[in-house]
Length: 433
Picture 1 (cartoon, helix red, strand yellow):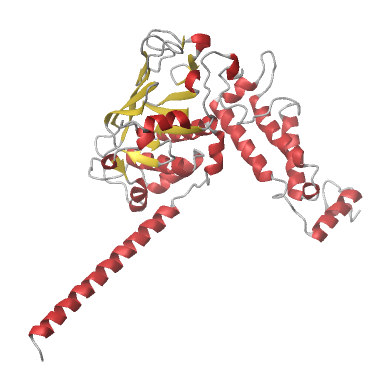
Picture 2: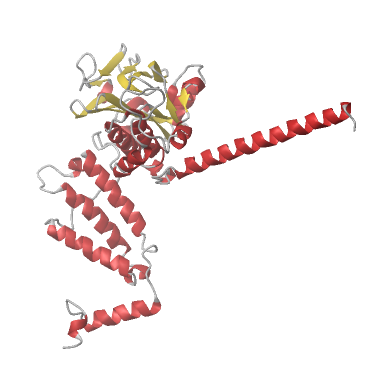
């Protein structure tokens, strides 16, 4: 009776022995079991659930809960590690395995079924047929780059440079022999330099073999994200080598150009647009040879750039001004913006951009903009995830700002001492004692 009181429910003797052995040898190899990798896959699946992608993985006629796909993705990843010795002797691993199997059972989910693999489901709305079966298929090297524009506005160039720009008015993101993408940015608030994209135009240039015998235009502006090109068509060229997909009416479209294997993603979030593109490096390189301003290729002009890192550091302790105040005031305190952006699950540059936008505009819809821009990056180019550090704080900028301030102070002090020394020397030279 005394022994039974030590644990509830009662622990079988074999389980107790195994536990004693594990404690005795001090083995817990969750890291060796790659639980971190499985957790990343779980987060990918959760993001896909939030964006609606998981619904496309459920075959027609099959009744399955998208939440089952999320948990099943994690469980199957864990199960693959189960044969390894490190996993068999890991308490963390075994508890995760049991807990998630229980979660599957509670949701009435089968262990067999679809799982989410971002590498295999990057563009689920496009035909999953090898390009070689189509006319006008891209035959160049399969090395791709990403460019994105979102928020206030923030730019990720094909060279993976991160910039925050003013660029009010009309600007070209892409302008090569195949297509042109132009955006128009308008002020977000009456004071300050904050702007966001309110109009976007895609022009597919004349290509009688693989597109159309004339220019094809897609134009979107605030509260009007069409589900077709200007003439009402959604496809052009042999075997639909140009195709527009309406993912969510009025909110999300994709344009695919098979002859250059390029994908364009446009979303309307609130009153403004986000833009993302995946394009072969070979096509981009040919564009670099021409002296044309393309923000995705060359970045924003230097005079149009905002030092967002300096802004985030300097405004750390800035207090919200009284109602009606102007100048360089902020619309949201940095600490509040940081908390909201952490909840939005954005990282690195997308986290910085989210905080910047909330501080300059106070509009919480920009958290969604940053999140969707991050998700579009991962969907179009999953390998980009490996370049992220998953940072969700601004301490690096505070340290940079402090170091710069210290340097300026030391420099000023040293300069003053030098000037005084020179003046004293000159005085002694002309006024000897």
